[in-house]
Image (tube, rainbow, N blue to C red; front, top):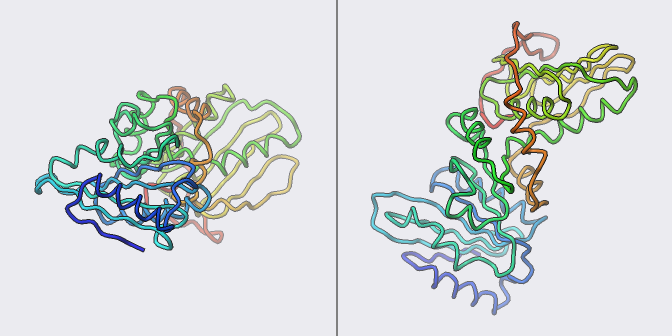
Length: 330
């Protein structure tokens, strides 16, 4: 059910939520957190709301969407409440702010927060330079950004590193979960030798590739080369050097990776790029600071530029240059 409240106020929206709860249409007491989405009122807004709806099936929550409209329009708030099948397992409040109100998201959010429930803020598109200092970010225990959605992902990642505050995280980091798990599992197999060096290859503007290299540099305390390529999207390969030979995880097509290591049979591994919904679900599972992400940010200073031209991605045994379709690829 969708209820539109044009030219409204936050007080009127809150009263409507209470009315719906008393009628049994929404049960706020069953919500485990408040998820605040801050985005422009554009073509991708509904995609982000849909991702939050899917995430709410695992994490029942109240979703408050601050959709910033035209700054030159007259000041007004257009509200919308979604419950039932139109809101997953959550209740969704969409506030479209126009004119001077577009910069007053915090004032609009506060009256609608669930009492005594944790708050998570998510910027699915361009985020603030310092999420913890943003007025809405100051309300939250966890602050989720996405460097891959920025105009300059690598510069945005460098900004996140400088402004990091416990509670910050980045979906560019969350997309690495499967890569990290596979690399750790490979090192758990014999021979148990120290890693002496590593090379991480990926798109030039892939923040996930940067973070993976930083993570290896920080935790293995080894020199890591960051090689840039245009032959495929996102992360292409990781090579770990040991005395007995090289462990390599290579994913040329963005779907299936090949793991090779000395003394072990070659294995094919599913390494599909993770979508926004899956990444958001994972991030909502924790409200404590992500210390591993913080360490990966510190590791960015330790990277060196790789030399040499990486091999072209191979699909079906033939070299094939992939065309860039999304910066969010990992």
